[in-house]
Image (cartoon, rainbow, N blue to C red):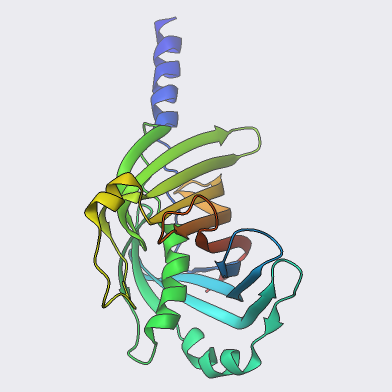
Amino acid sequence: MRAVVLALTLALVASQHVNFAPEFAASKTYVYKYEALLLGGLPEEGLARAGVKVISKVLISAVAEHTYLLKLVNPEIFEYSGVWPRDPFVPAAKLTSALAAQLSTPIKFEYANGVVGKVFAPTAVSKTVLNVHRGILNILQLNIKKTQNVYELQEAGAQGVCKTHYVISEDAKAERIHLTKTKDLNNCQERIMKDFGLAYTEKCVECQQRGKALRGAAAYNYIMKPTATGALIMEATVTELHQFTPFNEMTGAAQMEAKQMLTFVEIKKT
């Protein structure tokens, strides 16, 4: 009886220490379908919005221990300028052609236990194109604790070091891991942002205490498959929303909405 109890205890401890962090095995190339959407305007339907959409395949492969290559294949850019959601996206053939070489240039990044490290890119890759890669790498950023299913931490990401809430659940029968994380972009130790067009304005501290003019939040949803060494991201969806209310209106705040979707396609031998 004691042996059975000990075996069950060890099995329970082992299950609590399953590595849920994403892992990309050596000698293999992971193929994903990627779509990103960026729109700016007023939140109500039937009003004008403008933005872009990027569709591409994403290849991730290991080049050394904890070092990987990320490459976009057949990237396409679409433009939007019209009444949302009535008008369609229009292919931006000239923009796609102008940025095709940069978008197809692989970048190198460090990655270990779900945490993205340094990113390396040739000087020919512009900051605008590199931000597309940063958006994909931001999806891969996962600080997973092996012994907790619900927790909060200050997590580094493309937006800065911000308060992040994690919820992890495992569906053993379906062999799937469901992970949700939300970021409060109003609660950041270090916020990565750039102000422009504000050379002649003065900040009002009292106004910011009553209500912030700029608010933001992001939500990430993952479906992952556990493997012997880590987890395989099957699907990831990201929604990020920023609202700007310069005059503290109750309604009519301008917003920027960003959506990303990363879907697993296949694994190839490198």
